[in-house]
Image (cartoon, rainbow, N blue to C red; front, top):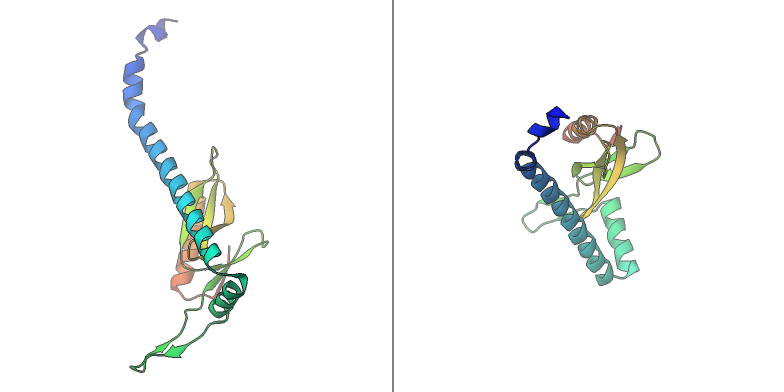
Amino acid sequence: MEENKNFDIDEILEELSPQIEDMVEDAVEDKVEDLVEDAVEDVLDSMFDERVKEALENIIRDGFEFVLKDGTVVRPKERMKVLSPGKSRLLVCYGGLRVEKIYKSENCWLMVQTGPNRYDGIGRYKTREEAIEALKKVAKAMEDGVTMFEL
């Protein structure tokens, strides 16, 4: 009981306040980003009927090329496919990668950009460091021009 007499709640709050503020700010930013992405996706979905969306997806998936007036040939970049660690998911990566912490857990997801405004989880890792290492491996494979990468 003697050790509790030196307990200063104001000092502890002063020390923890910046950390709590950072955590709340990060959580709010993540939530707002998710809400904006969902809203944009909903708007885009409502703008095009299914036939147009299907045609656009086929063009993007199958690739197309055309020649500009100055003779420049425009070809779509081949997208790398990423196979999940459990071999249960194969995603086409549009170039974006990020690590997301799973709420109230030490686990993290490696997220792969699968569309203009969409990220999907490809692998779950026990620590943020493991997820970051996986991200580095995928990023290196992308830089090296690999077309199919297994985690």
